[in-house]
Image (cartoon, rainbow, N blue to C red; front, top):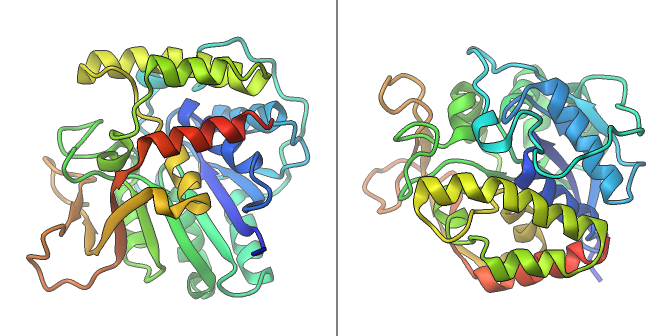
Length: 314
């Protein structure tokens, strides 16, 4: 049996981030969560670090190490998404405040120290929000970049274009400079863009399957989904809502559920119209070297089967 993959989840929870964290914490055979680093994004940092701890407690894993990181993008004002996730970021069911502590120290320092301590190429970074913490760590400690095994991130879009502007996906748009640093870092990157997450929509049956698990985690996932589904169904005219971030963790457990292309992806940092766009050379029309596996499709039934099975373990 292979050793579980060591990962750091960098996140701005967010209901779909919450489901991703639950999936990781429910899968110890495949995944060893070294720590969770919170970043400002969907909601401000004070809420994202608190939400991360609420989720660890829901998973029955209060020993998980949670660190607070950057409270604003590298060069810009913070843009948040309360209009999607509600004012707490986890709107929907009532949630008690967490009792587990926030770790002392800054998330960026934790990322740097962990990558220096663990064997080279043994730690995978899993960013589910803006890339501020990761890029800040890379800038501050260039020696760690070559030690990262892989970055598997949720962000960007190409065929589905934008969700916060006409051309940009939220996580990349919030801190395009950070995304640019990460995509130019040379670390092997796997990208879960809107192109794939919009192929993994919730349905009534899928939401009810979570509720029918009969555990607290299943009930919460169903209630969170009920909450943010309304926004996406109205916006896209779809029958459900994408669960974006769990695609990252599902890929680590079952990469066979996903397919994509190894291509060049550049981040737009200058343009007013296309700021934060992930310009993906899907058709290979440039000579720019490939720097990312850009995922384009998912076996949605397999993805939801995995999610339901694992959430049911909690």
